[in-house]
Amino acid sequence: MRPETKRAQTDTHTTEVLATLLNDGTSPKTGKQILKPETVKDMFTNQIPQFPDFGRQGFQAAKPELTNPAPEVSNRVTRFECQWR
Figure 1: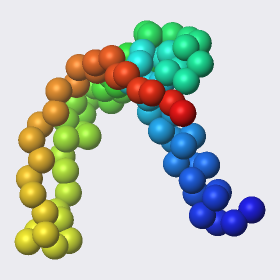
Figure 2: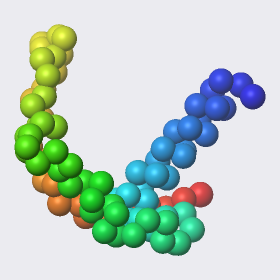
Figure 3: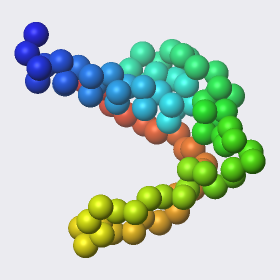
Figure 4: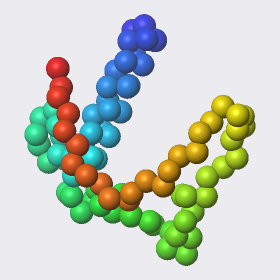
């Protein structure tokens, strides 16, 4: 298998996993429930209560002149619709 083919397959699988997480555990490709909605909710819930902002600390950009500040994103997950070929 050529490396670019393997990468395309990996990208496709990663996209499928992300789309499933954004659809409350339901695969947009098959329509089947893969994960329980409460499992997906737990995956987006802070697992380190003693460090509530651990994931929001950020890090210093290597080249600040090439970056833009990103606004705070909501921790609310909304349903994601996707069409598969």
